[in-house]
Structure formats: C-alpha cells, structure tokens
Image (cartoon, rainbow, N blue to C red; front, side, top):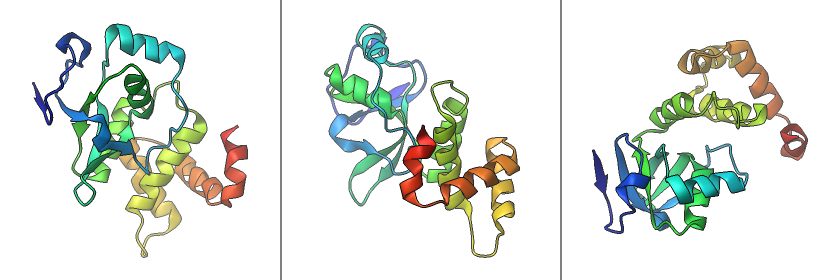
Length: 173
C-alpha cells in the first residue's frame, strides 16, 4: 500500500512493492547523516529508466523546513531526477534513530558502501547516541548492539573520524 503527498505519479510498475509514500523531489534534500555523496553510476540510471526504483528512499521529516532529509537513497534520488522523475517513493522515519535502523537493514551490507561510508554512518549514529556520562567505548557498545557490529570496530571508526577534517579525503581513498 502506498500514499501520495502530491499527484504526479509514475507508472505503478516502476515503484517498489513495499509500503511507501510518494514525495515531490523539491521536498527531498541530502541528509547530513547520509555518508554517500558520490554520483550514481550510469548503470543505476539505466536501471531506474527501464525498471524503476525497487527500494524506497529512507527519509526523516524536517517540519521546520518542510522538507525530508534523505538518510539512504541519495544515488537513487540523483539517478531518478536525471531520468525526469518528479516524485519519489520514500519510507518516512519519524526519528533519526529509526532512520539509522532502516538504513542499517537496507544498505549497510551492500557492496557499494565503502569502509569509509560505513565508518561515517557509524560515526553519525555514535554522535546521535552519545551522552556526557558515557565513555567512548560505552557508546561504541550501544552503536555496535544497535547495528549488530563489533563495538571495537565502531570505536576505531570514531577514533579515525575524530581526526581533523583535512585528513578525511585521504581516508575516503
């Protein structure tokens, strides 16, 4: 079942089978917590043009700005807009933690995510979950439990991503 926020609807055959909401592209923006910023490959554009979108984008609402932050699906967004789509199927998560869990289930294990992408994703979740009372390792355990990942790996990601921003382009390579 799906719902629509606006009326310009693509062919239903091009939409995911799972529950989604159609949102106009002008209401979708790159989320700060989305680690992926690379351009989509030609193959993804061709797939969307011919077969549509098989998984909804994962978004969270920003009522203050009347937009949705894309937490997962930035490349699908770019490819679909390049193909002329005006609305996109999304799964709306009310909280950032809910969006992280959906992203973890939908994308973390996919091969196109680099180690740097995974590290940034874990860093974002770490930043969202940390408190002044928790040690770095305690938060890494919370994140590791939430993502079913090794807390020591989470702690290493956090340590590396704590380095100055000028180092990050080197990490991405």
